[in-house]
Image 1 (spheres, one colour):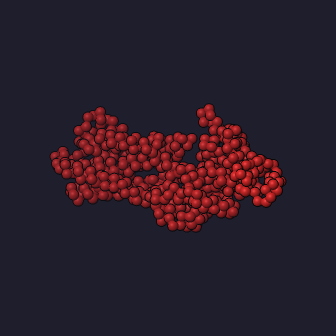
Image 2 (cartoon, one colour):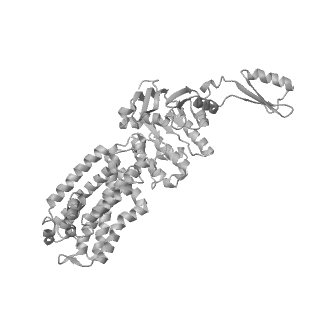
Image 3 (cartoon, each protein chain N blue to C red):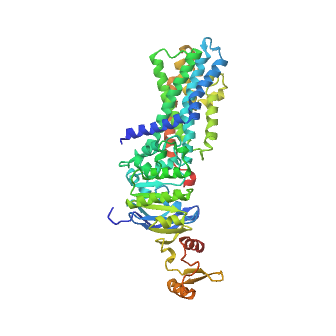
Length: 285
Length: 263
């Protein structure tokens, strides 16, 4: 593959179930080393899209290139599988085996695997290395899934809703792991329901609704929310909350401060959150 | 890692998983031994003059054990693994697909040998079973068992595509196995069954496995009491081999790694 080629390139992707298009013409490019998050409601086509890229599903139309190859052609190629790591939704564990045994066994499938003990530590399961996998909590099982996804030192990692069911603390820790992988140059395609997760991790996000990619940008700029009107809120001396929308909030607050003769009580300045923008897009779609 | 070592490692992993699930170990290994205890205690008499019933019954138990280890276990376990996404997960790794089947075959072989050994030990110690006394009989024992378990294993893999969910698998598989046991001469002397039942049983491997094993554990003088007038090892070999080929063809054409909802 040439330097600078995209890790994933998708053009006009289509997938039809019966007569209902699940994926209806998606164009997408993910650069090498990029973390890309796919957002969208349930049934929007996220998982279908990702599973086509992973070589698990056949497509009905369009062109797809993943690490320079068409997944439909190389789905059974051991060489291509060596370079791709996959964390699926709800895959089975090997109940009677320990975490260490499972990770060491999966390492055997790869020609240049990472050190199993190091990977177990990296996903935060070091204390559980000897525990049978059926004794793990939901979040710990998910970490094991990730360990199995990265044991082969993939160039490209697919993460399908990796933190569903995590408590907030576990999610933060998990984000640290993903950032760690990102800094070591792994390309990551992530699907998630959590907008804060996309915002914290992704270089770019794509929003899928009804099988189409309706927006794609850096989380900060999605839906031009960096240019949207700011909402300024404050409390009047009578204790009433007031707010105003402004395209130039700095000037607005300077005026406000002059009116109050100093500190403005309860002052906040907000722009639409990623969630606001996202929900608006989904409603409009 | 070489292909052979990968296959062995997969087999080791399957066997370890089996040995650690206590219920499975109990049912698979102890059940035939318990059955022989029960039947051996009920039927203490002889058949055909001087043949101990245990001698007859043990052949059916060995064959049943092989069928359970090969056919029943895989036809239930594989749909469950498919349902739980274990197969899909393996599919997403560079593991060559044959490695999965090698793992299953090694597990089945391990269980079959262990179970048959336990069965023969219990029958010999408690009920005075006479073990084969010539090298030729042991050789027959070996090839009938090997061919039988191969047919059963392949049938189990082929049958695994039939159950739509892991949960429905036991319901699909158990009646088939149970009926085959009743009509194939496992619990009753085969020739005492109605002839239509004998004819139906003759279409399936279990009857022929039992017959081949009878030639090992019963005296040559019992041969003329078989339906065709002899143990007919040639036909045993042919029928089991045909089942191997048919089941292998089914495996290769119908095996599913993912569930229907996976598209």
